[in-house]
Length: 97
Image (cartoon, rainbow, N blue to C red):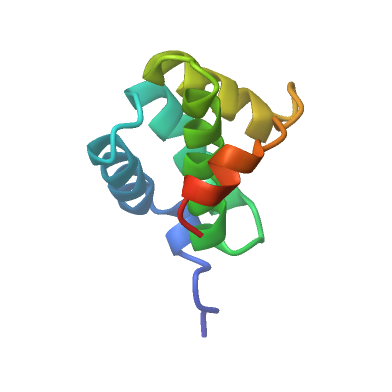
């Protein structure tokens, strides 16, 4: 008897599906592939992780960075190579929860 999710972590179709979903949401291919792998390999709640990733992107964009730069910096935050930026009071008011 297999445990739920046991095969899914090894299934490339699941990885591709997550990557395609992120790409349709506007994440570049390389970032989507890396984030997909991270989602499958981490033991935390996936939905919150994806929402948090997009919140960090939006936070960088509110600071004046273009979309591509914001995505790269958000990916660096999730890799642990950069500290997460502090949210300004203005961003906290306009960002969806």
